[in-house]
Every structure is written in C-alpha cells, then in structure tokens.
Image (tube, rainbow, N blue to C red; front, side):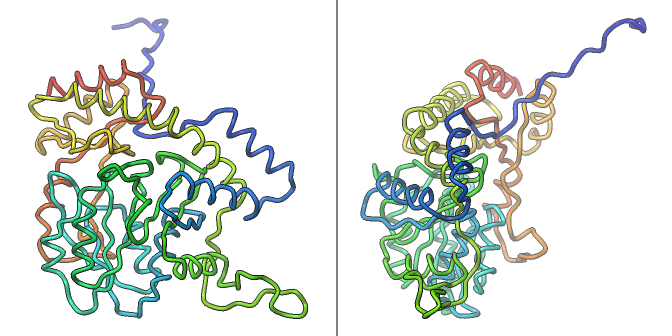
Length: 376
C-alpha cells in the first residue's frame, strides 16, 4: 500500500476529439471589430462573403449566416416549398439536417446509407420517392462528398432541387472541383470545431441569384434588401424571415481562418489523416472510412468491429484520448422515429468511431492512438 505521503498519480491529459486552432491573428481581428464600435452584420461580413466566393470560384453567391443549421434552414425555406413537401435526407447525420428541414415547414423523408461510406444510398432514396418529395439533401459525412454527379443526375431525373449539407466538407474536392463551387445549393458550417471556424457561423452558396436574394432577405427578418422603401427611411418587410445574419465579430474570425486554410489548417488535417490511414492499413479490427487527399476530413471516422468498440474506447480513454460516436441515426430519435428498415445506418452506427483530429493532435499522438487500435 502506498504511504499517505505518496503523491497521487495524475491521469493523462485528455486529447479531445475536436477543437479549434486559433492564433493571435483571430484575437486581433476580434479586437479590430470591437474597436470599431459596430458588432452586427456589416463590412466584415460582406468581406467574408466576397472572400468565400473568390475562394470557391464558379460565379457563386455566398450568404453568410449565424450557424450552419440556419444556412440549411434558409436553403430549404428559399426553395419556397409548401407545407407537406418532403426532402430526402440520410438518416445517418447530425440532427441539424432534419431540424432545418422541419423548421422551414417541410418534412424530412429519411433514407438509408451505404455502410461502407456513410453516404446517402441513391438506391434507397429511389425506393422512398413519392410525389411530395421536392428536394434531396446529401450529407458529406466526415468531409467525403461521394459521387456528386450521380446525386445531381438522380435529382435531374426526378425533378428535385439539391441542397448539399457540406458542414463537414469545407475545402474538399469532388473530381478536382471544390465542394460548393458547382451544383445547386451548398451549405457550410463554421462552428467552433469545423475545418474553419467563425466561432459560430455558416454559409449558403449557390449560383441561383433569385434563391440567394430570398435567402438574404430571410436571414434578416424578411426585410427588403434595397433599404428605405418608406418616406421615414425604414425598410419594408417583404417575406417571412428570421434573425439568421452573421455578425461582424464572427466574420472577422472566419476571414482569418479562411486566409490560413490552404497554408496551415488544411495541410495539418491532410497530414494527420494520411498518417492514420497508413498506420491503420491492415489493422484487424479498425479501418478508416473511404477517403483521399481530395477529402478534407472534419472527423477521423473509423469502423470498429461492433463487439470491440466499447473496449477500444476504454483503452483510448485510459491512454488520454477522447473518442466520440458521430451520429445516432435519425430514425432512432423520438422526434423523427421511422419503423422502416435502415440496415446501412444501423450497421454503421454500431461500428463507427471518431478519433482525435485537429491541429493540436501530433504525429506522436497518432502513433499512440493507432498502436492501441492495432493491438485490439
């Protein structure tokens, strides 16, 4: 037995699954806005929108919002769907995807996924088509966009609009094209742990000028975008809307993160994911989900033999490494329960695990994590 004077052994410091990477530059940007005395949506937000549009290319219009969820909400609302209209969406995604659809007055028609990729199964989506379905929302799980041309082809065949939930996929490419630089509507998240952060924020991206104009009005309580329509200088309200605008404080952080993305943030993620993949190649019980250097991963998602996942989590926790399960399928949630079959989503939910991935994770951390995985 240790004596009463023996100091306790401190537990290992936990390396979290995700966290932002901030520098003095972000702090300086926030200070600049604070010093200006204007904290709402203004010049910083407009500049961030312009810089995002320039980064993405393709003549896209960018509408920045206060969260990624509100960007999805605006995208559905700006399609002017009627009550009872439905949006196809994979069951295996964060609840924000479903909540945004419902909040905009539509219904979420849950679909199954391919358990090997975590992405929407178009075969299952085809089985769930009905006359009320007006749009499809593919989710770029873990930053992987899959075969977007197939999704757009499916949508064109069935007369559907496409809203890409690209919350995980800022900076990812599909056949060399940046996600968000093509297609119908793409929504990004800039929350604290995404590929770039604005503290909180999101963006709707589209080449549809009319849809973008509606989204701009809707994010600002439905006010007319050309300002003083009345003699007293007040703006008219032309449609229903919400307070979804991005404030300058957030945009200032986002601008710095965007400037750092290609030179710092993206290479750090790619290097860590490459190391994970190389060191897990051939592991008996743990395998990464598909991906490559075109995919800028938001989470390091792996599949673990279901019977061994709890043990792996315990071993990694004991070594000081946090893990998470992303996500519980929507059809198992009380608000969106669906008794139909979702075998792909059920299988992946029983196996998936997110390992630490952010700029604070070191190569030595990956060595230690993958050693635990290989020993399972």
